[in-house]
Image 1: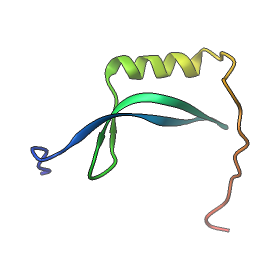
Image 2 (image 1 turned 45 degrees about the horizontal axis):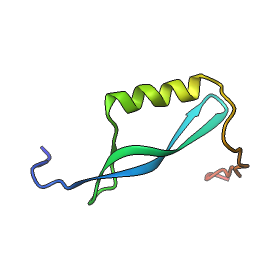
Image 3 (image 1 turned 180 degrees about the vertical axis):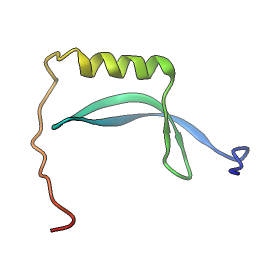
Image 4 (image 1 turned 90 degrees about the vertical axis):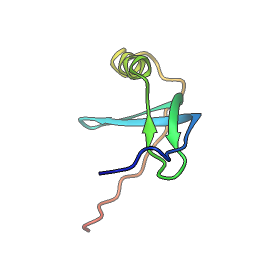
Length: 74
């Protein structure tokens, strides 16, 4: 059992990442509560809903980056 009483959550903006099939999505400046000790990110239900809308909308992104992919087991 984990003791959550001493957790310190800090409000900040983060970059959210998600892989769907062969596509990798990044959403910048997402509001989150971040555990100062573990780095775990927590999102409100409203934020999660907005993230889904952004990714599923297929709207034009603000920018596109190229991402190298490596195989760990090579």
